[in-house]
Image 1 (cartoon, helix red, strand yellow):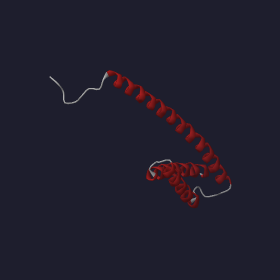
Image 2 (cartoon, one colour):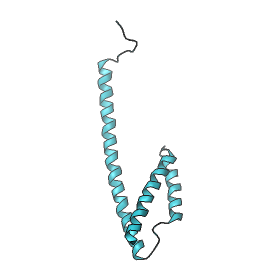
Image 3 (cartoon, one colour):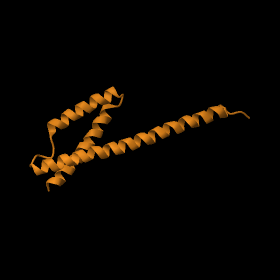
Image 4 (tube, one colour):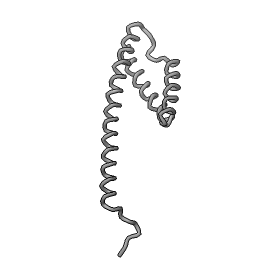
Length: 106
């Protein structure tokens, strides 16, 4: 009895498993980079929030936020990343930063 689906030879399966493992290791390293990068970013935004609170400045800066979103959309296009995803990601981060800044002002 034969199957309609051909089974790849074992050496192809082994090679595919090695390639998959390599991709997953790269993804794991990149995830770590993202987490540490976000941690560093939030250290700076926390400092900005404290500075704003000390000088009675508003927690958000809509002009800067618009410029940052446009900048990130351009970077996303250059990186072959969906600009809508990049914009949504930055909007999420901005909202979190503003929330932290408001907490500093309380």
